Image (cartoon, rainbow, N blue to C red; front, side, top):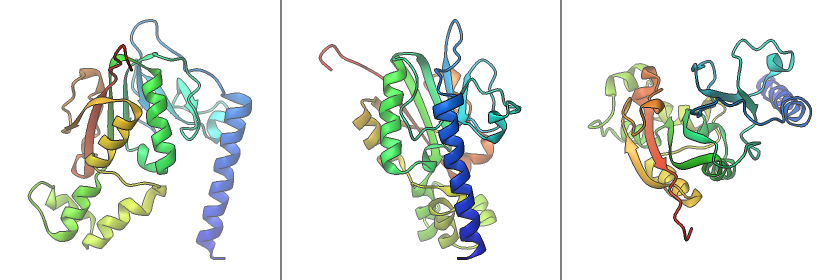
Length: 226
C-alpha cells in the first residue's frame, strides 16, 4: 500500500469517526434560526455570512468547541437533514454538491425541497463539466480561456481536476442539475450567471470561482394537487 493510500485511508477513517460522533452524540440538532428570514448558506466552508444559517460538516475543532467559524448548523449532508419542513426562505450552496456521490446528491435535493418554504429559491453552483469539455476540445467561445490556460497545461488536466481532485465524488453540468432538481420537485430551473440571481439574498458567489462554475437556480412551487 502506497503512502498516499495510507493517507487517504486515515482521512476517511477520521472523517467517518467525526461524522458518527457529531451525528449521534454532540450535534444531532436542528439549525439555529433567526426570528425573521432564514437563508441557508450550505457547505459554507470559511465563507461565513452574517445573518445567514451557515452550515457545514462538523470537524475535530467543532468537537472541541474551538471552531472559529461559529456555525449555526453542523451536519453531514450524506444523511437526512435534522430540520422541520418549510423553514428556509432560500438556499445557497457553492461548490459543495460535487463532494457527494449521485445518490447522496439526489437525496439532498429532496431534503432541501422539504425544508424550503413555498416560492423559495435554491441557488446551486458547482464546477462546470461542460466548460472543461469545451476547453478540452478547443471550443473557446463561452469560457474564460485565459484562466483555463493559466490553470491547466492540457485539456486532460482540466477534466482530471474536476473528476478526481479535491475529493470530488460527482460531476455536473446544467442539464444534469436541471434533471435532478426537477426530480426533487423544483420548478422554473434556470441557468444563471455570476452575481445574477432571482433573489438578492442569494448573491454570495465567489468571484475567483466564476471562470469554472455553472450557476443554477430553481424554485419550490407546490400546487394543491402535488
